[in-house]
Image (cartoon, rainbow, N blue to C red):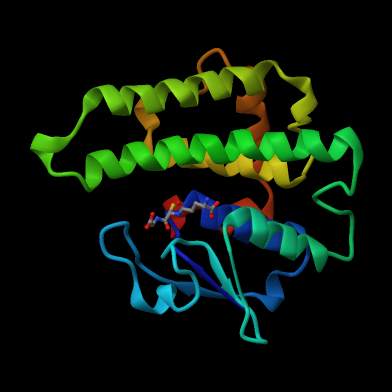
Length: 204
Ligand SMILES: N[C@@H](CCC(=O)N[C@@H](CS)C(=O)NCC(=O)O)C(=O)O
């Protein structure tokens, strides 16, 4: 199967990290592709009408997209400990942790597009500030919420680790580690994992 990705995309990183943690990375061929909301890559559009990465092309011709779907598919192939618990509150805690991680990435990517893609005279600082506010509130919630079980490896903590990595990569002036020792410790520990090392956007 082929995973369309870009090294800078935190959602694509989440899929790559999950493939490694699920023990199936050797089954995934990475295809580095450039795309943008204003100029979708034609090759990518064959697999995802939304033109977004990550997108996964399966051998049988089916395509899967949205990092949540791709990560769940990778976990279905996982023969070790599952990254998404099968049922109960454990499952929903992991899923909502993933939602917070994905939400941080959504807000961060939206801010990045506002600054990098929108013509200067049309940029709206108030809108960017509102996205940053979402990020800050989400980080504060994760710092306090023990239900997120951040030291463990699951689809939720993978999403959060990729979100924090993206903040380091694109939003270093946010200083997110300040007064957030639990998240700081979490990313320090996560960053030592092979899955995170091989997908580090700063080393691409
Ligand atoms: N909900 C999607 C979001 C993916 C996403 O926004 N990817 C960005 C790159 S980080 C993208 O492909 N942007 C191009 C576009 O919006 O057209 C997921 O979880 O995979």
